[in-house]
Amino acid sequence: MNTVATGGAAPAFVTALLGEDRSAQLLKLLAGLDAASLHWVSGYAAGLAARTGVAATHAPTPPPTVVAPTPGATLTILYGTQTGNSRLLAERLERQVASAGLSVRRVRASDYSVKELVRETLLAVVISTQGDGEPPDDARGFCEHLLGKRAPRLEGLRYTVLGLGDSSYPKFCEVGRVLDARLAELGATRLLERADCDLDFEPVAAGWLDQTLAKTREALERQTSPVATVVPLRAGSSAAPTASKEAPFTAAVLVNQRITGRGALKDVRHVEVSLEGSGLEYAPGDALGVWAPNPPELVDAVLSLQGLSGDEAVTRDGKTLPLSRWLSDALELTRLSRPFLERHATLAASPALQALLAPGAAEGLRALLKSHQVIDVLREHPARWDARELVLALRKQTPRLYSIASSPKRVGAEAHLTVAVVDYEAFGSRHLGAASHHLATRVAETDTVRVFVERNERFRLPEDSDRDVLMIGPGTGVAPFRGFVQERAETGARGRNWLFFGEQHFRSQFLYQAEWQEALKKKSLHRLSLAFSRDGAQKVYVQHRLREAGRDVYAWLEGGASLYVCGDAQRMAPDVHEALVDIVTTHGGLGREAAEDWLKGLRDQHRYLRDVY
Image (cartoon, rainbow, N blue to C red; front, side, top):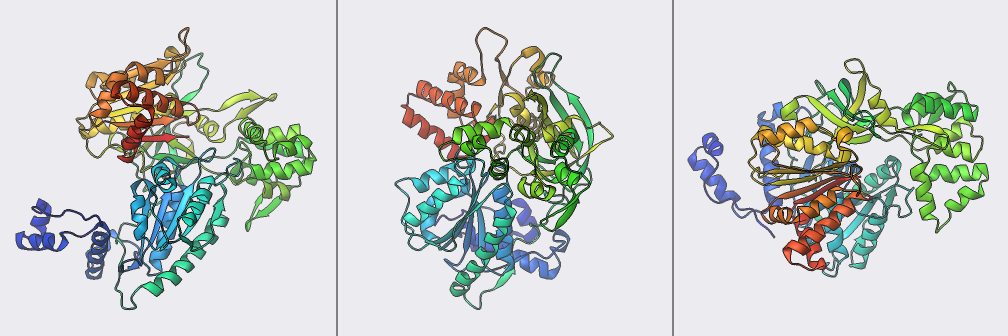
């Protein structure tokens, strides 16, 4: 078991608080303890503080409690997430188990070693599936280890898996299914059968959480000593912000400015909103969640096409609203779902739709889901819905996440966004993106938007501010790097910053051009590599600029730099990865397999981080 080094002199603030003798005694007592034991001691100390009133000002609500851990008597919750939903559910399970007086720990997959599995007795895995059966970035290493030849036998483990996914994709919840099967193959026993959640995950997830708690209580109460001490779990650390995904903050729009020039094919907006009074905090790399209504003209088009009254009251999940409110504020109209298509194919008696839903038609279905909105399907495959059936068939609305393009150290209680507005003609009509259109039409200093902060702990600047940083962000993927550069400037980081940015045209689509030029002058940005794909005879992308600067890129990485990639997951991210493999083989003298392992090593060290979508 790994232990934490506590030798040497105590920090000055500890000595000042406790005195030299007591601080020396404290270090002696803590020497050799592992991380889990240190967490327990921390909780115990917090419990004593709470009883004497010391922690009262930091814990407005009573913290959950946890039984002091007995070896082997702990539920480990392992999660992997791309958008934050798996983390939220893992946190809910942690709170429920802790509140029941049971020992629990929660670990992100990227921070977990598969070697720990041999010591686990109870494990709950909460993991999402991305795209066509891929694990989230923060769980890639864990999945590779577990599915590899070196995975340990796990006869002493009992486990359960909650998968999150999108049923519109052929490999729905594939990662959860594969991990569930692999754990059983390695000899582990299911504590509870796997559950698979669609985008509307609450109904399935709630049942899985309750059952997992019950099974955990049954298992741990048999293992835990009846005289175990109950202490607060990290008192004061669980206070939730005022606003959240479930209770978003109504933020005033301060700025709404187009930052692409005349003639640009894309309308990209710089939007600034106020977080004053929200209780929300963020760090560079986090995202802002935006709840947005569907475009009014789209709602009207659906109602008109179906001959329905927007005033008709409809009840779903115990809530009654007029149909127009359901279609505007609560249900998806700009994104299709497989369940809706299945119901509509039957209602319309459409052989074409039924063929796309058949096994083996994955590519055609994927193309339809990408290109069509609900209104397109209703027009192309006519069928008459009644109000209640339509409300029940449509997917619940989900918030859109935008990388925050600012540092709070620079802008204070504000969050800045870089928004590409979705607005195009298709199938004979105008198509709008719900959130981007909503943001683009907000009037500065007049309108508001409903927002919350989605933490992204897997996309953080290095703790060591002397470390160099390479940032690859074409298009609106540059957003978080604006925050990174601001943060590094405000904190006086001594490491160098190198940005790779790409777009179609230099003149009209060089996002934040003046800011990057100013940063170069002030040495808060040390290198800027640009790729404008439509300005020359040959299309040039960021991966080409990477290869051209391959020697320096490799030298930076060899010297300890951290590498960040943000943007399109389908084409850009794989192309950038291929360029990196080529750089390592060319300038590192490695074969392809060794180069892949070298990059995997960067990822395991949290030095190759991606935020792709």
